[in-house]
Image (cartoon, rainbow, N blue to C red):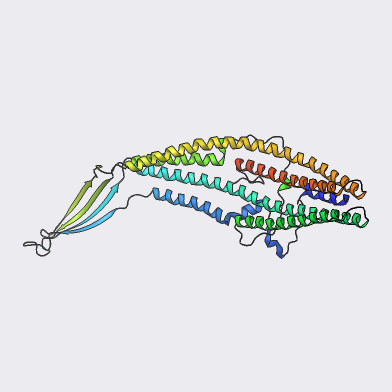
Length: 421
């Protein structure tokens, strides 16, 4: 029994630290998730990453289109034909070939180009923020698969210990030192632990399926090449973090600047375009050619672009509000992340102490029961307390990883410390 506790102690403290070095590179390797840093690099072709890239490509196309000038038009016109005398034929026809070119004035094109560039900057900032969020979600999914593995280990150890308690109870019943009821109670505990093990195995399937789907894999992973939970230790400080340099705020700021540029473009769009026309006219009656030149300016009587201007002003107000809200949210999230990381370290240390106490309590309860000095109920209670303590260790490790992942997200890093571009 003492050896079993010792083995469990090593497994709890070490986790899966030796998983990567112990892998057998065989056919099953294709279903083993690589170390997290490599997995994140490999997900550049994942659907969520492709969606982010497409947003930037869309903005690039719009920015290129914003620089385009109006197309010229060519018109051909014939006059003074198919009428009454003397215009029955084509002898007095006047044929005109004319080129028309719209000229944008009032700085419309430059404003449109600036708005397109600002839109591209905003899309780039949004994409980086989205990529950082994706790295955060992938880290949680990776850790979720590891936690599922660890929960199976816990359930297997509890089942093994419950079976050991059952054997001890049956021995005392056979010796006439315990009632048959005690062995039935121990047997019920074994059945309950077996059910928990089945549940843990089912949850593991879901955890690996979620990791595979998030990373864009059609075939589900079945193992991890690297543990994440065991790589984090307590630290003395977790800051500072400049809220003005965080990805969410930079994205909101870029959106506000893009809205400002679009408002300028909408206001300048109200200025009418000037159309220049030049052409040549053939006068058949005189057998002569003549040049034509013209200038046309629309009268802004009905359309002054007020609807688009009002919409752009409203969009700017919304972007300014989101900018301010984002800064407040980021400041609050930074403060919360600092506190959560410190609390997670304290929780992990407390969980270690709790596990040591629970292990010693179970050891003493087992010795006392086997010696006939305590009832079975005390042994079952001690083993239950040990199971809870092991779960507390795992929960504390999961909480620490989540806190570190939040902090890394605010810093623009992956959970393993690589910058996200």
